[in-house]
Length: 79
Length: 233
Image (cartoon, rainbow over all chains, first blue to last red; front, side, top):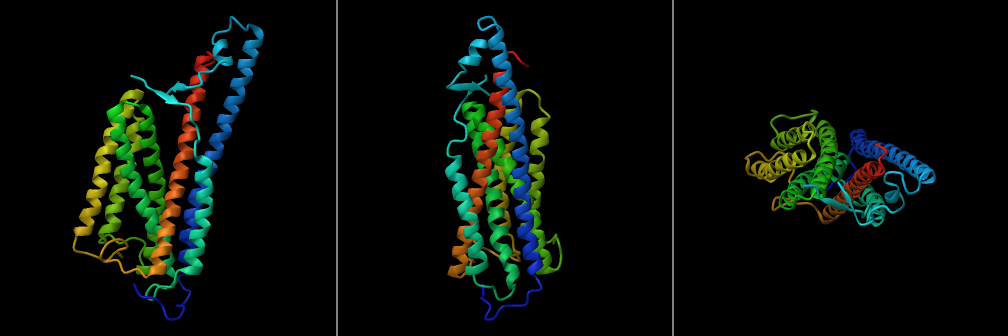
């Protein structure tokens, strides 16, 4: 590969800009999708916590799974 | 047999993200302010520092997906299948970026968006089309165990195809495509250094996005499992 002795014409600058913009757009779109998914997970978690608290408040010892609500398995979880 | 998943979400994600956020601007600064202008292509050659690392990371991601699938078949631990899936999924996204940036480069350099008689381009497209069938195949199978097993077999076979394909292109007679790595590479030191940093930055981005995706998937799985445990769904 040879190096230029002077700066060549800038007719191809648009292609370089386009390539880098496309790349960053792809990454940005992906991150936006991930953020949307994260919002959904957070909403699900909030609902789960509310329902667990409600269930625990109504019948602490009788509600199905109430024990797990207060003592979630900390070490391992089924896939 | 179902295996279990350790609850270690997002471990190492923060340092990985910080490293990526530092490496990408550094690579961009080197590309545009440090690396010299190439004589033949001029400023257009700057696409090289984006396109080639993208292609290398994509192909390595496919191979890594295959290796992780081997571990899954050996251990039957679904965690490895999840990792293999994420590596292939991310490689597909990076692969789309490679094809688009390559196409833009080809248009600027050769005057055509696509050149069918260029073996590197066509072989990369073949690899992409092969992996485009991975997700439909995977999600066409409902039983999770079978899904993981079949997807792993596919990932291994396709992962083995990637280096063979690469070697076949290397051994082919046409050398239109510029060689970056190997004996025929003649990159000046400043360009080689910039390329190396770009490759590191791209690899870090790949690892970070894979880590984010894995963490998100594990959290969703955990959330569903907790919902079931509590008898809500």
